[in-house]
Image (cartoon, rainbow over all chains, first blue to last red; front, side, top):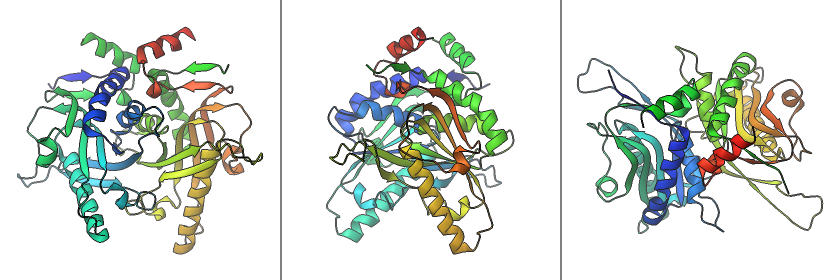
Length: 201
Length: 201
């Protein structure tokens, strides 16, 4: 049986709060991209802690990515390898040009198989590259960084570029085993959920 | 001094949980539109409770609207009347056509001056009308409903159409006075925040 970890809202809040200082000091984000639905809650909390007095909030763009479990007959294709876009950046409000030269922080709740993160980074990089070409702004560097609440220590199906994973541009608040993480926003009984979380302390 | 109300995460969770049954029975939503940043957390929680066994999740589209306080010299224009889009629907993933004939649930955390909600409803209705015209699908009815955690009992600057506000298509989990609502995702000390919330019980 897979071990379950129960995470309370206040623990999520504190994980974001604790990570915020490092994110500000090392990532210097100008923009957050929240991968929905799981990234919505951490991104909204992070926004509070990334705000500097006198400066405006760091804007959040939400994207929607769904991972479809595919248990096909092809033995090479494991489960959870197909990503579907349900929402992408809104190019009418946020021109891709606005991402050029910026530090973009991608936020999600968990790095499980890494498939969703790989997709998000690859597609965002591609879009930015196209915009740079089109606008003759190849000299400007756009940096992608990643924040997740939990990274599962397991074999990953997705890969992240070396300039992210190898150069300290990836931050997971917690490293956990290959466990089942019960996030509070999925709890049908939040009081019982908190009791289970406290019993694990 | 303005009275402050402290709301915990678990209270927000339960407000969404309690509202979900009524939303399912009366609004029959096919799609949620979360107004960011405030709508992110309730929308994500609601999604858990709106999911029916065996059915897929109700998709969430996030839009970003910022209310800019404008204290101009024009006495008619009060504060908080300018709305800026930071994100709109992504028309490449979600064709506006997909909204035609659907029940769309708009989610935000608070109905304060109603300016943001007015803007969201008006612009979404306009976009859907244009899509209907273009596609010759005028006969199909798109219904907009609204869920907020809190509605402030005060004079509103924004107006909502009668078919929403007058026909039971608007649901606020709590009606409160013109108070300052402290949401948990803005708390710099979440334990102290919870203590203050519990002291108010």
